[in-house]
Length: 530
Image 1: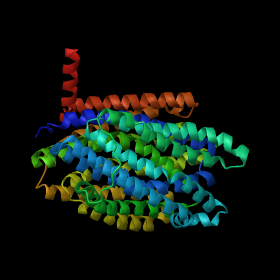
Image 2 (image 1 turned 180 degrees about the vertical axis):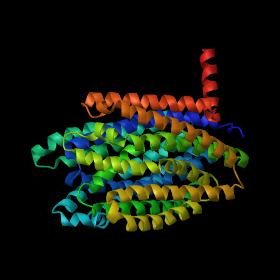
Image 3 (image 1 turned 90 degrees about the vertical axis):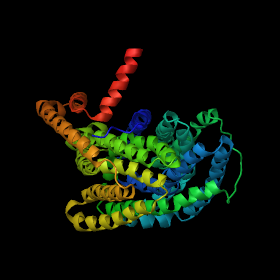
Image 4 (image 1 turned 135 degrees about the vertical axis):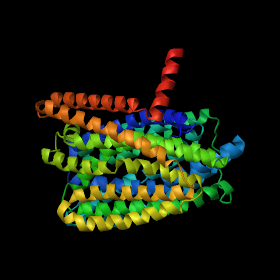
């Protein structure tokens, strides 16, 4: 069987650093969602906030952290490999200037048409007095978040290329911290002035976006970068970034079209549906962020360097090894979320305005989202491979095919499944996109080590089966604890997850998954030296 790529341990180390930082961010994000659930439950105010925040989020994925980040890191890492620091940093200053101007204009235009955008995104809100107006107000407050997060994405790309992963990945923790502290303070202050409490959470979101950008700047300065205001529209580097972004943005627009379609359908399913889906997807984003996003951030500069040096065999080895790592982490995570959805949602959210009925509806959505977890995370590795190869048309094609599948699936299932149709459709489209992208990439690269991946998957499935058995036994033995007080529920969940992780990790090690064996041997050698 083929050995893992020589870069695999380096990628795993970088991904581990990113994963730890992302974990902090996602935990703070869950605390943020707990606050929302306790204060606003699943109804009028939170439905409005979810749709309002989705608008800058939609644009962020199109122009910020999605297309811009991937395109910029690809070009910046290749500049870093081929040119001197002055030329590389000149490109960065020009990219920052261009997007600061472009996105500011975009924010102003979107603010002017906020009510129209809300009506288009959630037409069901028109039937509830005041809901469109509240959502539009929240949208206008949060739109500048797009500018802050886009600049933050460029800074993050520069730091990742320089081998700095922890601080940029930790930066999103400061977004959540700013949202919690700033938002929660205002929730209790604003009602004294006759202002809706949810407005405070919107201002807190903007505060968090500013903190996410500012926290990275001292580290960026230590790399030697000094921003020099300039705007050269003929700069070859900027043009290359834009050329990579255009098809990627078109592809991501298809993803956002899916989100638009899903939001539209959810808004028609009855009050609370938008909130249930959002709470569930927030939770499934924890493993996506820790594993899929962390690995994609770590692997993108490596892909860029390998293609800059025309090392296609190295690219194929790195891709196969990285996919093995993402499967190793996300398949058991998906199984765990499906089996433990009810206690997880109940422990995290069920208090205050969030009822047991909300727990049940959200837990079912979480189970359906978890089905596509491994595919969602794997796509975050496959798409950067296409970027590195300067070929973004296939991710675009996959995205638009996914839109057609999403519409058809929801159309035929929403009457029977209601909001669960949307969660399940998301998983189905992610699975389709994974199969499409991996097949095309296999043909484009003239093969990569499928036998290596199949062998790894066999070990992962066997270990996951052992883990599922342990979870089932733990739930049966501790059934009284899971239905007892909150302290008993938390204790039972912690014991169950700890046993499951121990069994899964031990099984995988005994079956000798190569990435795990390599990392363990490196850890042992360092420990013995120390």
